[in-house]
Image 1 (cartoon, rainbow, N blue to C red):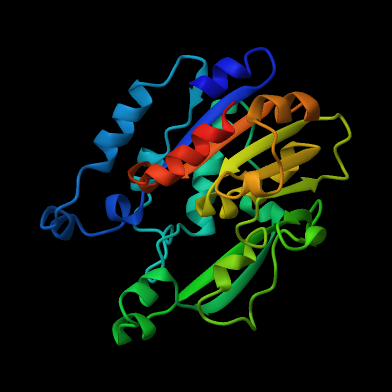
Image 2: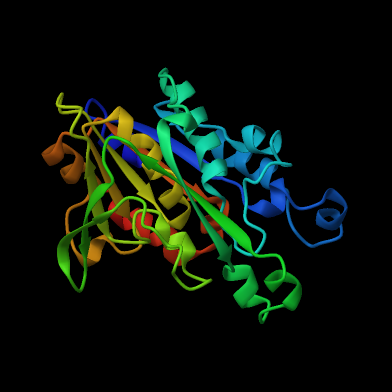
Amino acid sequence: NRAAELLSGQSTVYDIIVPTSMAITAPDDIVKSLNTSNQQDAINYMNSLLSPSVVKVPVFDELKARRNEYIYFRTDHHWTSLGAYYAYSKWATVKGIAPTSLDAFKKHEFSGFLGSFYTSSKKMPQLKANPDTVFAYEPLETNTIRICSVKSGWYYSKIITDMSASSAGSKYLSFIKGDNPLSYITNPNITDGSSCLVIKESFGNAFVPFLVGHYGTVFVVDYRYFADVDKRGLAQYCKELNIKDVIFINNISATRNPGLVNKIDALVR
């Protein structure tokens, strides 16, 4: 709400709250047997507290309707690029533009992914026997991203990195080179000065590539690390770069972490 107030007249603020696989793909009978609260009720409650000036992008029903599709990994806590695509499509609809078809991207496939659930389960053999596959969709306009890291400063990398030869646990790093404080993507085909800013944690990584075809520049901030490379607050950053759309995208579990909430709070000034 404070972001929308600060950016009034400058930028449109969108908010996407992403449910975790517990609420979408986990079997209903198992969910009922566990001590877990209802994510849909929680998201509805959060959305009810948003100012009318914040554009809500409700993705829960979109994902739930496709729960039998491969939209969340089995061995990892993230959504797949297909899950992220459905959320992007909903965002585009809310914005009033046509989402780009998946057929308009170059599809990559990286098999043998064993993610965070595999690690936290102390490497259960049942998960190892059923590894995930990472599907990644590369924008045809460009596959170049410029990244600012704490150690290396600015450098060029790829929006979608070939992870076919990487270790089993690192294949989600295919998307925008993982979690970096600050990065941006320039679309050479759009020269109208249009831009957006994505404020995200790791769930946003698979979402960002789908935005490339809509803007001249897509800026990406990981709010957990942004202050390590840039001392500007959100209002100053958006004004200086003339950013018109700001997209907050977080998985719902961020709300249980005071440290993450404080990081967002510190950025929105």
